[in-house]
Amino acid sequence: MIVSASYKTDIPAFYGDWFMARLDAGFAAQANPYGGPPSRVSLAPADVDGFVFWTRNAGPFRAHLDQVARRGFPFVVQITITGYPRALDAATVAAQAAVAQARELAAAFGRHAVVWRYDPVVFSSLTPAGWHRRAFARLAGDLAGAVDEVVLSVMQPYRKTARNMDRAAAAHGFDWWDPAADEKRALLADLTAVARDHGMRATLCDQPELRVDGLGEARCVDAERLGQVAGRPLDVPRKPHRPTCGCWASRDIGAYDSCPQGCAYCYAVASPAAAKRRLAAHDPAGEFLVAPPGGGGT
Picture 1 (cartoon, rainbow, N blue to C red):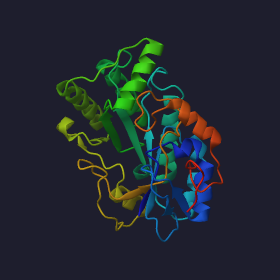
Picture 2 (cartoon, rainbow, N blue to C red):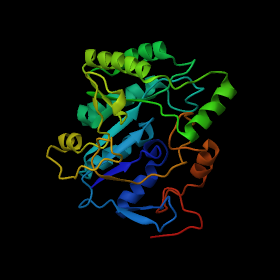
Picture 3 (cartoon, one colour):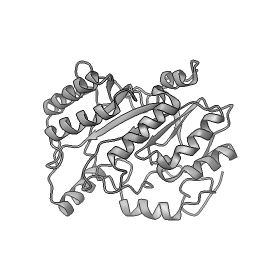
Picture 4 (cartoon, rainbow, N blue to C red):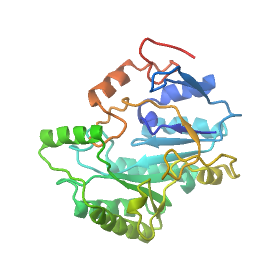
């Protein structure tokens, strides 16, 4: 089993002590988002083939990664670096600091252990297509030689995403839009070419309708990449999260509405205020990353 930590929240940036406590305990508890009973996700060495860590800031987790490696778990760090203005990314670490983290992780654990994410691509008056071309080229140059893949996607305006983007736009005085598919593909084609010029393979997370020549299918939970890190193939079934997703089977141990970084476009946070409250109430010694209403146990 591959364990994802977590596409629902930034465990490395904010919940690293909890993760290590759960690793010591051998399991993490998961609330059922649909109201059913909670469940356990085993973190025992015999049950875990590897971890995928998702983060905007790997710094607070750096020493923990050494411990994870010493315990024999292969892992991949998916690190998002975009350099967006504060109106879109209220409290993320500066892009150059994240670049330095990615390069240091690659030096310590190998290029296969780090994947750069430049996603989602947000079209706005602060970040039009030309802005993305310049920012992506600069970051690709900074990361050249340290990573071999960059994952792209274009922001999908889900209802909560559109609501939060509208709120940020009103507060900071910018416009945003969801352009036609041809405009999205034109930008993705340019970014793909820049990535190739810097020795990286560009892949697209979901959104097959936006694929262009040279832009591969992203496998964010990638048993083959984890096998390269481990030095042996992993026997994990292919089980996409969605019909158009290229991932392998995994269990996620995060919780929605618990990342306080304030990214206006975030799919995992409906209420930034609620996310801050959940972080404040978090118990690093608890079974759950976020305790379900009324408590509960497994």
